[in-house]
Length: 214
Ligand SMILES: CC(C)(COP(=O)(O)OP(=O)(O)OC[C@H]1O[C@@H](n2cnc3c(N)ncnc32)[C@H](O)[C@@H]1OP(=O)(O)O)[C@@H](O)C(=O)NCCC(=O)NCCS
Image 1 (cartoon, rainbow, N blue to C red):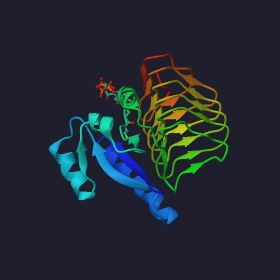
Image 2: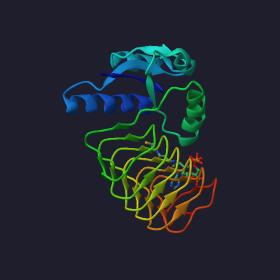
Image 3: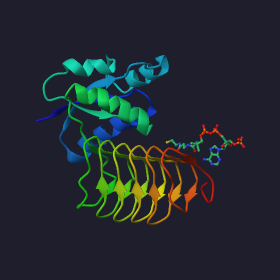
């Protein structure tokens, strides 16, 4: 039986999430998802055209999900952790469950049980004993080492490396190609800039950048 799926967000991240669902179906050899379409409150004209080219309908604003067909699931295709959190709160209120999509070219350890809404792009790797909260996104070729905790709404952007024993608190964004050295904690809603190297704990609600990250 196929699962009706709606992608929230027509932007680049959302359209990439759609390609992950399609890659899962192609790898399995039989469809798991029935892609109903995209919802987005303020899609640009450009993104609407891009969605059309993917041959998937634009359904309307996020409120479309309130009256979604039975058994519909959603996945939030929004890269910014805090925007994703705000949207998740709305969708949760409609009682629509979150699906997880894992690209067949991602490597997620067998002992990892991600929370709902997990998205793993092609080349993402998470090894062993990693706690993964809700709506966590591991972008292309991002790596997460042993014994980490990724709290709800964490994003690890392309090619970033989170070493073993780290804790990324809720809403953390690790920018593209950044490194977080082993055993460190990045505080709630903090951002690690692209290319940064985090060498000590990062407090809540700050932006750090550079090598070493400050
Ligand atoms: C660090 C970051 C959050 C800063 O964003 P911001 O506060 O809007 O910063 P601004 O663009 O206004 O730049 C402020 C200053 O920081 C510098 N800067 C910006 N990003 C930087 C980075 N990653 N590393 C070092 N310096 C950076 C800018 O050059 C600028 O310097 P200046 O004041 O000397 O001119 C952002 O640039 C970043 O790296 N985000 C991650 C993006 C990412 O991962 N993208 C991939 C998406 S898939």
